[in-house]
Length: 433
Image (cartoon, rainbow, N blue to C red):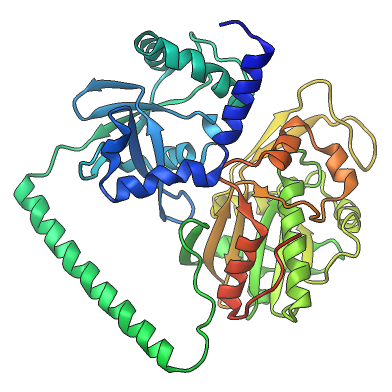
């Protein structure tokens, strides 16, 4: 296919559309309503389990191949960083919706390089027009050329379990319906009681469209890890009992997502202070790069957000302890060489010698120290958010794309404040910066 300016522009537009959360999630509701047949036989809905929270998540994918009845091959258009792909690699048990049929459980398996090449070749042969259209879109989202012999596009085979006899399925459906009716009756009764109280209800828990709800005690390795703030104060999470705690993973030399995470965290901290909750919430940005993020560097990083809110802390710790800390929380961290030309440190001006790739999570702990909510992926940063010019200039092409064209998995400042309102019982005005 000719690599024309118009085709590249069309691919860029299509890639941006794939980053629109409402557009990507719209088919999910139709599949849940057993109306998936409207999409024909080319799509399926995959239910996967959050690798950190254990919550059920859903994504609609194109079927690349059907090697046998009850077996489907799908591809990750956003590569290995797609949340659904990372989830099924951590927990391969899934459920699959095809058409308007009931969901069936199964197992996800990553195809090898040779198997992936065969799947890609088969798709290109069966759907040449679709592949000519989609290839530049995927190369835009992956930011890499797709080699048919060694595709950078991950392929996953979904092997469904043997079908359940209809009679048994019907009995299961009846039992589930009874449970649902009982739940709805309980909810109606609760609503009636609240309506009769003559006062407004407390902020509700955010729904699954915002993030992943949980109620898990922290591992001891996380709770008791000694952290050191940029001011030199030693603390652990156990000392923060009685407060809501927001933990973000970051590093001062991140060029892609950390500046965006921190911008929203700082904005939320300022909104919490203005709402009089500065002594009830602690925002804790902990480095994933302790070898370079010294206390002096963390101090300089805080100064970029001057005046830094008092309820926002940056912290480091012993490298081994932080490795265990993040591993227990399920944060992916991998040291990698920087690609030439090496970027220059925004603080010292010296060329960097390595990068640290990592996943992006925002953890919310309640006053008892339990993990209650998780926001995953890079955030959408609204115009006017406190993104320092120094870090804006330091961001690379991927970081600038994350800023100007956030994908469908992004979370927002209003959503962050919604979680905090639920945990504190106080609504927090703001969310526009």
